[in-house]
Length: 613
Image (cartoon, rainbow, N blue to C red):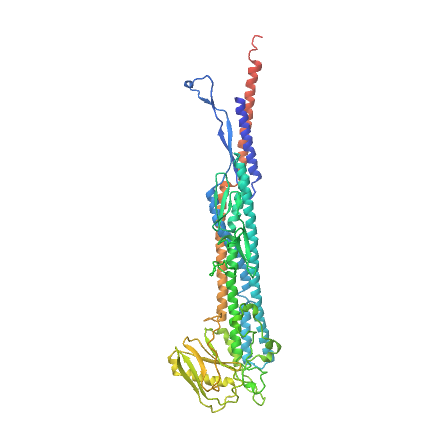
């Protein structure tokens, strides 16, 4: 019995030494959990033939190894995985917001705001020197620079969106790989557990895998008796025992990926972690399974929409004013009495047919071919004798320059038919225009024959505007109407909801009709372009600061939790060294114990009974 006790002691202490060496070897292994040998007294037995009343009782048989146990705190694991998804989310958001801030590049001397400022200043300079070829060339170059800046920023945003979209597909593949690995680990853990052993190292790999998965999406984890885990995500079990469900992607017509379940093709709901952040950044797809109101933050799509809104506003507002101006090339009588009606920026007849204005934006070919086609004057620049007239007039250029401070207001417009075949200038046009407002009420705008004939359409428009401003019916009704030229058309516009339209009662020949009310949407309203862009840039800055703050907070929290985990599960080389000494001393003592028993047996066998021989 003594030898067996010593043998057990040596075996168990040797196992403890082996386990301690295993801990030391994996001191720097990611995900490794410190292991310890659970020692317990071996089953004792009673001394045969000795009654229990003698007081001797059971005799111990030494020590046995009950188990090799991982020192792990499940509560800390749960907390780390809960915070992992938030950390993964905010780190991904922060990384992309830093890239977006580089694209915005504000405040700086090379950002969009500086380019816009130079563009408006060039028009201001042109208003002072409207016939200068050098100044006109500057307007063309700065207009071109503005268009190219919008084009470039749009491309940068769409490239970033495309990169994030590709990353979604990559993350789905990574998640599928981890799901498959976890299923395989479950199978191995089950096989070892049912044999009565503890698959400690496999469980370490499993827990490390779960930590990585928790940073990618919101998952919930349960563990069964045999150490296998069930993992749920988006309302479905992605791993359950030795079965698993993987993810896939479906793309829309733009190549944008929607995360789906591989077996059903149904959209997978992921709202946090790295994948959730990527979806918030990129925005939803156009596939039918997406909600009509996006469930994502649409960070990059909103920035693209805002950039398009700004580009559209600059193009439409600049062109509206420019079409009412006269260029240096407008010198063919009688057409010289009508504004050129040309656009500064390229623009379709129906602005609503263009979606991505920041990408579409470019100078009109007429402007690119000849800077003298810039319509800087409010009145004709050549008279009927083809002589210089109103040279030095930069009124239209000044109006365009003032768009920098313009507060655009949504308004309805009614445009006349072409007047080039109806009115001949010089003209003494006289008659009425009927304004309809407030549910069918009408009022007449009357022009008497002027003392001096109107030399061009702009002079007629000014006379009509004076009558509109003087009309007491309209002022009483609170309706303000502005009349402008659009090439050879007169355009009446109003931001008042009561304005219903215009009809010709004789002033323009009686047969001229007006279009129904038209409103161009999707433009900046009630704020200047500079302020609008400043709000976008500041909004990006605030989002970036929030992401950085949240990412830092999560990093601090996770470090604290990881320190707590390491204090429980981590390998301390000092502690393991002390254990080595302890187990080595016990091993040596057990060996000495066996030596003593051996000496006793030697005495009994070889020396007892030799007296008197």
